[in-house]
Image (cartoon, rainbow, N blue to C red; front, side, top):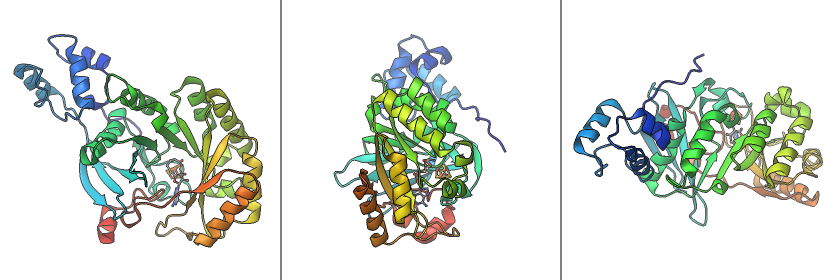
Length: 349
Ligand code: SAH
Ligand code: SF4
């Protein structure tokens, strides 16, 4: 398994201090100019017209603005867009644009090629794991989407991979995207979703960045969670609960508990009671995600009636719970469906 980061000289993942140190610039302030150009949509040096022609030529011969390219764009009738993005080493990741009923646009980005966590119900967990993405490779997913559809409102780290296993690159991505001198995205518009790595949650609480946190609880039954999400073996539920309480205590923010629900697996009355006792004294909101089909996996999507009954049971038990609408169905772009083969997807459209 190759977990090394490939070296890239792409500027998209650098801040202006790094650019000033690396680039052969005639004046130090040029670094900030280039940094701003990229945040404002420049994808090559030729368009940076406030740099001299000779500097642009030299930069073009030694560096690139981007390290990735779009290999395929799929669009669903509900407005969801999925980009397949080719990395410089030839591997592929997927990134999804979600548009809500108010027209707000959210980028759902990947942070790893594949995922090592092995959740039983997730397509990405079944394709295995190759490596972490670099900051440039994550930022470019956001910018590729902005180039396709215009300014985005939010970014969620809910694509392929486990963000808390790649915190270094995620911190850098967030620092660059939120920099007021660059793209200037608000931290309140950023959500990291984790399968439940306690150490990473505590590190986020202690060292930031102070973004929103979502935890994929799925079920509060320990034995069932161990079988569905092997992360539970090394991050038991009582520890996870403490980490969530620590995060919301320290940051003052409400955490989202996500639960992918599968017919006859984690939607009965007992499941609701277990979830209620896990969540009762936490500052959380519960987001129910009816399972999105992944071919070859032994689960079934629950009926609307089953989902409604589960949500009602949670609400009756005093929890704040809602259902996430499924988007990107026809392009395999919904939660947990990323990573299916391009050829399979072409058959779908
Ligand atoms: N790795 C991170 C973020 C990516 S997964 C995490 O696990 O949190 C994003 C969400 O999709 C998670 O809440 C996950 O539980 C859910 N999910 C995975 N597979 C799914 C599927 N087939 N149907 C519905 N939700 C799924
Ligand atoms: Fe990885 Fe998240 Fe899928 Fe689990 S649900 S395998 S952590 S991407």
